[in-house]
Length: 285
Image (cartoon, rainbow, N blue to C red; front, top):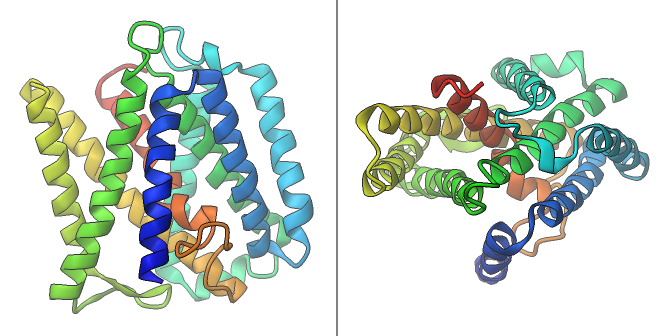
């Protein structure tokens, strides 16, 4: 399993970097739409038997309608389009609710366990903001510096990867107190703190090397910590839905890693939280 994970990761890293830095914005949006489609299909496995067929169709129709009304090359004019900002607020509201569901699990599952439409709605408010956050960050300041958004996306992804690695090693070394035992017994509070620490080191190193003034460094660091905390919640929320569905992985598309959702679950929360918090604190709304 470890060998498969390493091989798959080594194959994915150059593909991710290539997509970030070499795909034009519209083609990047098409790739994001493909990820959205695959993730929607896997979310169908959380909803009900047979949902993996009709759910992605419904999700993609809604996403397609939003793309017709909001072309990706017109997201920043110069501020982020109000519709996308509304989507980001919906995402934050959903993740606050998701936090309550995780904290109260398994009792909270009594509210949605048998509801197909609620579980579908949870998937919609997870994946649609993820798509628009991905595209919006990639398109940030696109016409003045086409690569800026790519570097920001890589930075947020790096935060999540650093937090995951830090949580693993700190959890192995010091983990004693369970973070959410009913949802994910392997995660510990010490591991989460270790993840926050390693992600903070990355954020401080990046902002210092780029010569940010203290105020901007604090803004980026604060947004980074919020994003890392959100990434933990994204991971736990997907684990909760998988536990209810009685499955270990959301899919088997990525050998050693599971499905697409298993790879992006942390980012579905981290990206919209980072983007909205940064826009608010930097007063770019």
